[in-house]
Image 1 (cartoon, rainbow, N blue to C red):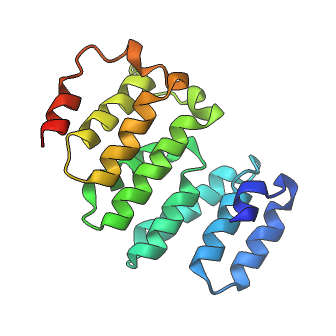
Image 2 (cartoon, rainbow, N blue to C red; image 1 turned 135 degrees about the vertical axis):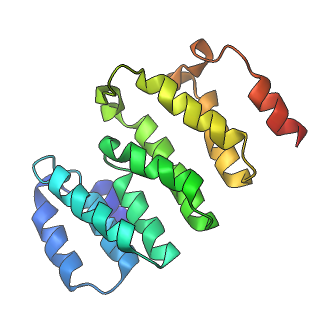
Length: 168
């Protein structure tokens, strides 16, 4: 996990070589996270990890791959879909963690969605999560909405969804 957080951008290919010979999916996901910091290989590597993730049957392995994908803002749609489509709690929770991580990345503001405000799209996903029944997903969503740096107070006109969630 240290490498995932503190890996050297120019060592991305080294991390990928290590991942190719390593048998631990957890270690590999951390190596992928570190390698994804290299913008030169980010798109292609992200696509490869996405394919691995979509084909992965083990929920724990899949959850670590989703965590790695959460380092690339362009993966937000897939990650968001996993929050609501999966029945496995580990995938739902990890997907929400990755989704909130994307929201906190500096590159988040560069996301473009045709004719839509990305902040509103993320807000809608957080609201949907809060209206759900998963306490971990609700908590992660609420935490992001409370962060002053995200400035969601300007976008939320009706806090009724939070009152409904608290009433459950």
